Image 1: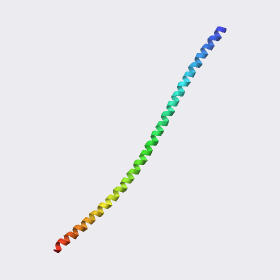
Image 2 (image 1 turned 120 degrees about the vertical axis):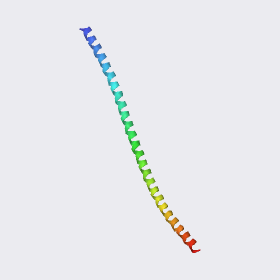
Image 3 (image 1 turned 180 degrees about the vertical axis):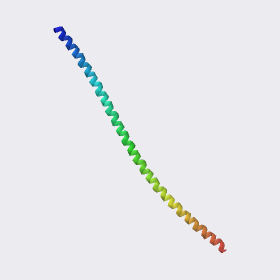
Image 4 (image 1 turned 180 degrees about the horizontal axis):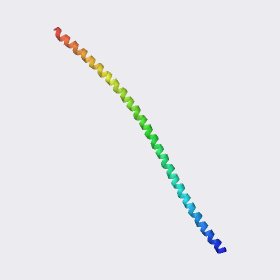
Length: 93
């Protein structure tokens, strides 16, 4: 009986040791998964911030383009007025 009990304790001890190893491995994988999830969240937040920055830059460039377009139209009008003045001046002579 004592030998069987000792053998049973030995088997149970090795089983407990195996379960502990599996628990440690599972905990390690769980921590890796949590780390990977946190990294993905961080990357997603960085991309969102970058997208917002690019959207702001696009809006700024659109406003700059509109200012340049208005300035160009104004300069074209001034050029036309000056050309008209030059033509009138030449014809008066």
